[in-house]
Structure formats: C-alpha cells, structure tokens
Length: 602
Picture 1 (cartoon, rainbow, N blue to C red):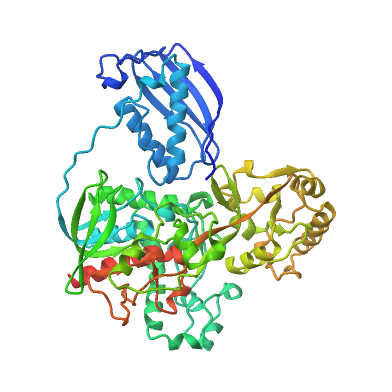
Picture 2 (cartoon, rainbow, N blue to C red):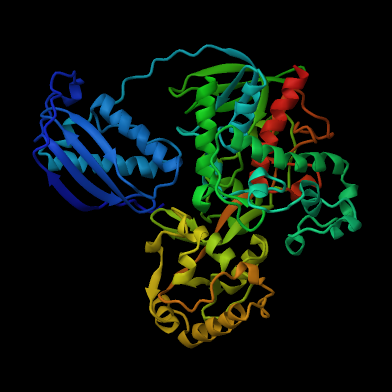
C-alpha cells in the first residue's frame, strides 16, 4: 500500500477576529492548550484535490472549522469531513476516528486543523485526548426486517420497508452510509418522468424488451436505442431451472417506477443523458445524491440504522433464518431477530477472494469501498446458500492510480477519448463493453488514454469529480507529438492516429477502424491542449454471488429457498434473464422488491 503524504499548500493568518468563548467548558485534553485568537486559513491535498479549511480560535478553544469548496466525493468524502469536524469541535481533540469507508478525507481534515493549531501558536500534542470509552450495552432486538448493508440496495429496502409500516433496523459495518453505490454514475430506465419532461419518448415496455428479449422476434421491437440494445436471447438460458422471463420482465418494469420513486423521496436528478441515463444534477455522478436523499428520508422517518455495526453470523432454527448475530461499534455481540436481507455488496475489496475466484485480477485496484469484503456471501454460504458465477468480474479497463486510489476514466472513454498502445495506435472501440475493452488492454500490455481540451468541457467530464476530472492525473501538451514524448509513446504514431480519428468526427461518420459509434465521439481531438495518462485496469463489479430465486431468496444446493433470508444487489446472481438489467438501477429495484415481499407476507 502506498504511503499517504499530506502537504500544506498555503497558509494565511487572519488576525483581528476575536471570539469570546472562554466561558465554555473544555475537556481535560484541551485545558493546557492556548492560541492566538483569530481565523487561520490552511489548504492541503485531499483525496481528489485541494481542500481549503478555515479554523477560528479563541484563547483556549477551537471555536469553529469551516470547510471550503472542494472536490471530495459527494457524501462519502464530504460527510466524512463533517463527522470529523463535529468530533473535533465537540471534544476539542485531534484524536478522532477517521470514519471507516472514507478515511482519506477524514485524515485530511484532521491534519489541516493540526496545521492551523500550529499557525495559531498552539501545540497539537495538547489536543490528543482519546475518545471516551464506549461502554454501551446492547440488547437483543426483534424486528420485521433487518437489513445488512447500508449501500444503495440496503438503503432502498430500509426506506421502502419503513414506508410500508414494517419495523426495520439497518446495520452498516462502515462508519458512513452508501457503500460502493456512493460512487456510482447513473440509473438507466425508460418512460421516466424526467425523460418525458425532456421530450424523450422511451416506452418502458419496449425499453425492457431490448434488455430481456423473450425470443428472437422481440429483438426487433423498434426503439431509439436499438443499436445499443442488450440482452440478446440465448436458447441455452432455458436449460437453467430458474429461467423466469416473466419475473425478469416484472423487475424490468419496476425500473421506471423505482426511479420516479427515488425522485419522490428526495433524490436529486439532473438532465437525462444519452436518452436513457439518469445522473445527478449537472450530470454529476448520481451515487452521492442517492445516498444523501435516502439518509434524509431515513432521518425524517426516524428509522433505526446503526453504523460501525457488522453482521457476523446468520441465526438458523429448523432450517429457517430467524435473525443475525452482530457486533456493535465497541465490539460487543448481540442478536437482531427477524427476516434478514443481505445487501452487503460484492467481494472485490477482499483480495483473497479475488485471487481465489479469478486469479488474473488478483492484486488489481478496485473502485469499491472497503465494505465490499464478501462477508455477506460467506455468511450465506455458511448456512447452505449457493455461490455461483464467482469468476465473473467486471472491470473498468481504463483507469489510473493517483493519490492512493484508482480513478475510473470510463466517462471520457465513453465520450470520445482514445486508448492507444506504445506505438500510439488505437486497438479497440473505447466505448465497447468493459469486458471486451479489458481483454484488448490486457493484450496490449501498456495502454494510455488521450483526449483534448474540448472533451474536458462536456458535462460528463467536468462533473466527474474525484475521478476523470482530477486534472493533476494527466500530462499536458500543446500538440499530440509533445504529449507523446511526455507519455513515452511514439509521437508520429499518436499524431497519425489522432488525425485519422478526427476525420471521422468531422465528417460525422462512425469509426471505420473499430466500429465506434459517432454518438460516443463527442470531440474531434483538434482543440489543444492535449491530455494523456498511462492507465490500469480496476475491478468494478463482481458478477458472481448468492444464487437467488425470483423473490430474492437464497437457494440451497437443491435449489430450494432458505426461508426467512433474502439477498439483493451485488451480493446476488439473479435468475435469467434478469442479469441483463442494469446493476446500479437494480439496487433500488431489488431493495424495494424485498421490502414489499416481507410486507406482503407479514
């Protein structure tokens, strides 16, 4: 693991701002601390870029901390800094928890406040009182539904269960909600209110049929997306004993309702992109807005959700799941009885499991949070559930590693950036499916992503905060040849490649070399400066998981459902042909569906 370094970029002392606060009580760790009153400004490199912070002191207290505009990940990063800020102010200590799941952002704020303390003439060592000992004694609970995992699936299930009148508890092993869904890009769907408002006519039934055709004739249903339609019928599907076209169709139809439902409960969406994509405002990634909207609704409904609480073992009785054993924030164990929904996500943050199930991807970085550790899969397996398709791992073929994390370049690649090899030549349709592009990248060995200034101005790129729009990632040059020299690739080869690619865009033709659609070529690569970076593959979605039936019940070795237990989201493998449905959209669909099933059977 790379060591994380922080550096203060700028420090400005503002004097003459005095605040009376000495009469407020101070914990023992802060009594000896003294400061020169005033507001001190510090800046440092965060997870995604520069984070400015202003810290105000009285003679003996940290009076206020103001976090300025920054590009830390919406919700995951910003929420973590809010938590650390409150802890520092409440306890007058820099010895604070770093918020599991968003540790870099939390550490950045802690470090910057310590630098402000020094600027104010204080000693950070005197602000080191540890958190109070957590002696909380937890009692066993009984509910209608316990949701394990606070990502997109678990949040949707918990909100829906509460709206349906169920008594529900949600647990999340990290110190922040959202999981890997907090970083996701957009929902997919047809017939959504947002589409109708923009004059986009995508009939929801025909939209679903392009993804899950029942027979070859269904593929011919006309749709504006027919050139990109997925889910081609495969006769071998019908050999699967769980093949259930009707169930898949019903789930697909829920896409429309669920996106409208998410908007109704307060999730913010922006304009529809490429006819079917539903991002956040200003084309930002939806994930942070989704989690933010769900948490506000949970708080409004006064739902019991417990952070830093990990499920460790399912409780079985007479072959039925009746609850789950958990550990609280202080490590103490207790039980929550009721129907259990495993919404724990995948396993790509668990390198041992990646190496076990798909050795070629062992050691690769992942875009998933540390909570994607496979614990839900292991708990289900321990009570007899099947794990299937475990070698099916999706990846972002074009990503790059910077400041302690891998950064996806999928948005520029899908909108016109090119991928080239050492000779400066293209070798694939960059907007093709991830698996196809990843295979091509592996064949090349070394791959670089290249684009021009015009591409940085499209909304998909400019709002891809923390990922492709971190400009510090890239080498920059005025010409393709100069960029190639900086990247260490063939200058003439890159210049020739860009010239040919530009001709297709200028003439509004599909790319003759790789079949890339002109729809995905949003820049002619003729506007300097040019940008480029060497890429890596990062794991993205684990396609394998718990085998479930059309009611999201895990199945044992005899394909019989384990009663009282449900699983949804990335932890599962749905019956065919449901696997053709968009996975991020299905987090909300699956979560809501399980809540509705539990409510119906109550």
